[in-house]
Length: 203
Picture 1 (cartoon, helix red, strand yellow):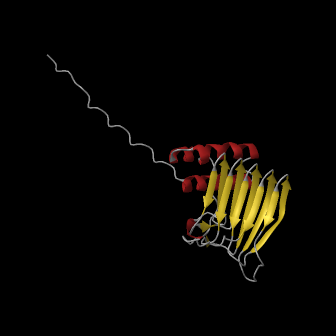
Picture 2: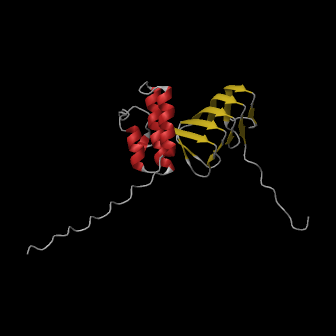
Picture 3: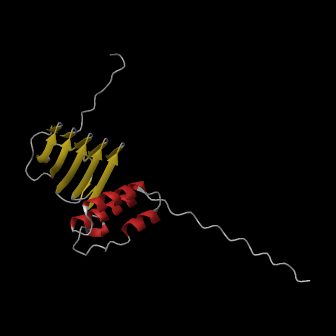
């Protein structure tokens, strides 16, 4: 009698690596670049950014960018392989960058019913000039800069919103922050860090 053969159980596949915020930002920068040079139209850009910010695993991000040719050496990738573009997109949520975060020369911010806070107080600048390209709808964009920075918000188109530059007098040779884009029923504000107030228990 021939003994029955029982195949060994197959080992379960390891779970797919989870995507981090930096993974999503790199993928978003890649599709932004593809849109900028004509490889993706606006509808494709929006569809892919939606998939990127909904992605849970790195493999999902690979599928979104698999057909995009890598950037040339003179493209938007800086020294050390760091991207020269930080792409932020928030919808019905809040995003912030604070502390000693790396600031590329260009930041794109797409905000819808949400808010983004960019605190440059302790940030590490990779360029003396930072350009923020903002598209804000029913939301807010707050940028906090150290004293002396040169601020340019003259190229923002505002509809039913407010654009405020509360920063003080600029100093020669200081970093330059240029903000361009649109604000629809939204606010875009640039200001200095708030002074810390001391609280005395006997008052």
